[in-house]
Length: 282
Length: 253
Image (cartoon, rainbow over all chains, first blue to last red; front, side, top):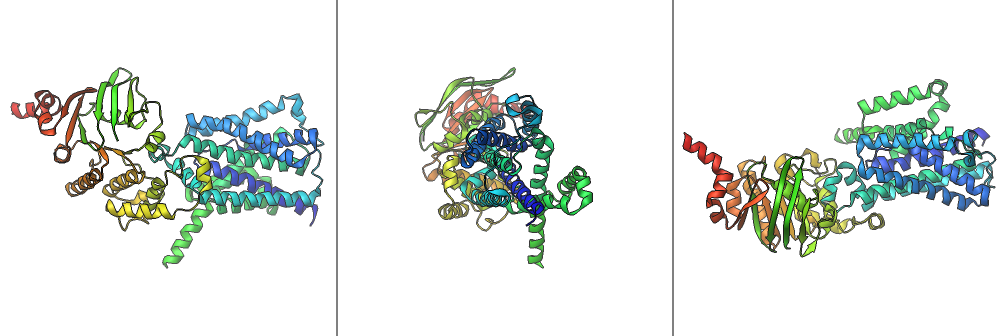
């Protein structure tokens, strides 16, 4: 494999982890989060600092997931107070707060970020395999959660949390669980990113990234693990395959997002389902 | 299950919606709660369900003070309720709506929910309940696609699935035609026959008088009548508050 292919596969793996984890929060549990990039960043910084201090890969990944999950649960508490649009606006605030805070912290490298993060020692191919392995585990976890009573309760809370309460479901606890699991996985992706680039800077985790991740979830089909994986892979490859898309990345992604919301709100998963039903009927 | 309200009151801005209500309902009773529009019935149901926090007073379920408990915690103690405005999970099937309710022990906390996958027992229970409420054959339909009468039955099915000891029915007949209303009342009577305490909030006086053994009348947030339905409805104060305007209108013609 060429260095380019290894790099591309690694980015695909990271985007799959991020999109699938965001889908757990926004797709399964209906809590619209536009600040997922901040948790990814928190994980990356936590892993970078842990690696500099200890050079332990497992510890760095554990710290990355833990720091992001703690931050996620704090933000999750906001979801207990504000709903739908207001939660989306709150999470946008978290995204800007994160990059604004990190840029001003000398111990986090300020504007320049943290460079020379110790490598994992696995080499480029080893890193790629590790990222793809975690992406696979994330997909497996998402499928398991979706089929468990937790996923069932998430769907109820996402549709109508007051009605869920009348079935004995503590909506607040489930929303916090969704934020905790989803952001821990985003933090893990951040840790893997720190090994992948060995350089961490605030610009990587800006609001645009969070919007791109939400676009992957919506285009894939909000709530569908398979759809979101396909969208994450497709939307990562698209700018690489078509030069025009790469030059006008935001324009194309924004346009696709608007088109899907307007014409196919169920995303790729919804379109596939409709076509399958039509084919079965005919 | 016994339900007691002790001096419960709540004010919304300048309106005293519920004003010092004290009521005691014994296990196995079938109580009708009536009153003119704006009497405070729905607010009182909200207080019992835990959706509205009272300014003062206590709500007791089976002798335990649940005033500070959430709706979900009250449901797990044996309370169930059906909504005035139906609230099914529209994008789930009818069966899934009831299966989710039947699995309330599985969903008591996220960790327990995450550790359980199997649904066979809950599916069997849900199918059984759907037969009882007359929704057999509609299991696979999306809940949002049902007509209102069937959605109301689905509300009852979900309430039954959480193994309640007391059910609050908030206007279960509203919007139903005469046949649907009569069927719904038969279902509620059958629920009560199983030993479940029933509190029925309803505008349809005829059905309330037919089914309830005790009537509580609210007006301006206060209890103005409480007792056997025939006795309560004959009370001049109740007639004045509840049917008075109608009687006056009749008299004036």
